[in-house]
Amino acid sequence: MPLTRLRLGYLPLIDAAPLVIGHEMGFAAEEGLELDLMRLTAWAQSRDMLGAGLIDAAHMLVPMPIGQALRLGPDLPPFDLVMFLSHGGQAFAVNSTIETRLRALGHGFDFADARAAGEALRRAVPGVLRVGVPFTFSTQFELVSHWLGACGFLHDELELVTVPPPKMADAVAAGEVDAICVGEPWASFAVERGVAALLLPGIAIWAAPPEKALVLRRDFTEARPDETGALMRTLWRAGRWLDDPAHRGTAAEILSRAEYLDLPSELAERGLAGKLMVASGGEMRGAPGFIAFNAGAASFPWKSIAALIGGNIARRRGLDPAWAMQAAMAHFRTDLYRQHLRPAGAALPGASLRLEGMLTEDRTVPAEKGQMILRADRFFDGFTFEPEIQA
Amino acid sequence: MEKRLSIIIVEPDKERALPIVDGLREVGDHDIRIISEETGLARQIAEHRPDVVLIDLANPSRDILEELALASGPTERPVAMFVDRSDEQLTRAAIEAGVSAYVVDGLRPDRIKPILDAAIARFHMFQRMRTELAATRAALEERKIIDRAKAVLMKARGIDEEAAYALLRKTAMDQGKRVAEIAQQLVMAAGLLTCR
Image (cartoon, rainbow over all chains, first blue to last red; front, side):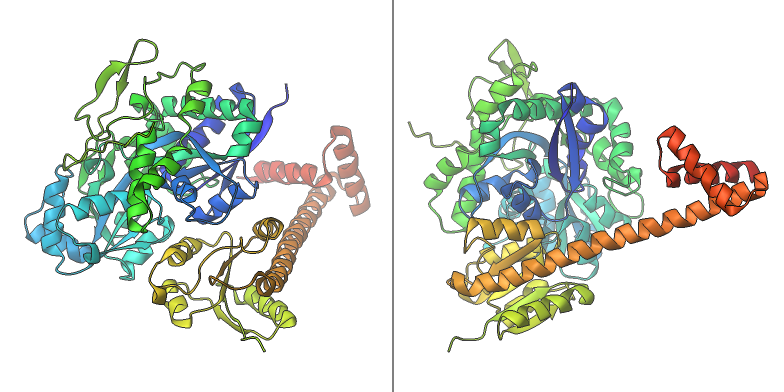
């Protein structure tokens, strides 16, 4: 049987692994698909190419389709987010000057306590802190504003600046930003260049920050349900393969090839294995669970996440949060997740909305069939979010 | 008379930027600037307050313009949005050609369209030139390889150039491959055999 060809856009980051592994390890072929992986250079490019139908599906920052749903992007056909591809994978790094000051204050770069790290940072930086984030609508933006907002940085003391991930190290070196929050391997790349030190992994701020998602055009998910389902099952199985710790080294090797990341595999392996180098001096730090793809229902696109992020974006842009939450939730397709991943044996939660930030540790809960484990998702400051449900 | 439009082209490659400028000059009297140095892009654009910014769809600096396009303060808002002002077909044509445009809010579609059309035409020209260049380069490489393969055969078998080429062609036909592929294999094998 001939394979159906699908064009997928991705940006060079370790969290593109489900696409690359789905293709390279034959999960796509098992589903009758041939994946044509296209490496892109800008998030806006990915969004526009998806909108124009030049790619069929995209590896996208979770908040991007929310920005589109809130009409904060160009006038393109509606998008659907059908599953998350990863949680975590981000790191926050500071320039050498701030690193020196933090060490002088006695901070140990121990990755352990986001509150202590944030408050030390507040003391080390007298005025405005400029932080590079990959995109206006990004998990990094959400993480940094939540974390540093709770650690004493006032609204006008925090300047979040868009910097393309491969340029993060340059931006720190040129003094355009003081710190960066970016997906791996680009924080480690800055460490390797000797211009930055890792202060925290994203999971220290929010234990399960949804980072990348599979996004398609709604007319595609409607007109081609079979291919949509086949693609989702491909990436879901690739994610399950990736969550076996024994596979992470292999994944780093494959992902680092010239046609994908085109970097030394040792760099990609740091994030994938959860063993990061804090500073160029060689200090290593373990970050268990630094990135997750599938375990603990990581791929389930909770509508409450859409509401949480949609509400945040709305408040920043002077839009009505209640409207924004509803608008965002309509594009998180838990119904398609259930329909297309049930046959693959994915554990399905009873509800599609939940109280975010409630789980201090992994918890076994009733599922549609039997039981399932949900990942811990607590915020460092105990923040919780309950979406307002309109009947 | 209508005010001249201020247009900025963000393009690090001068060779690419200049023909776009020429293309735009043909469709109207505009004030056109090229930004080739992308550090401090947001600041540079904010200083010029252009009506239109043209940039390659795949330029990583686009994500910086996205932020600028969403900025709320009146002084921070030189450009408003994207390529969607006129019609869907134009948007698609622009994206396919690899052009993205950021246009100041309220600028009339009939003023934007000729500019975008001209940019789209130039971007297509680049795509064609790039494809042609790649093809020419590949052909040149193949000719070099075939020449080397012929030399190997001439030396090893004591035949002349014409006979060497005929042998390559016959082998290619028998195996259902291209002459260049056979030549490549031969050169590689010869390299291995002569290695000490």
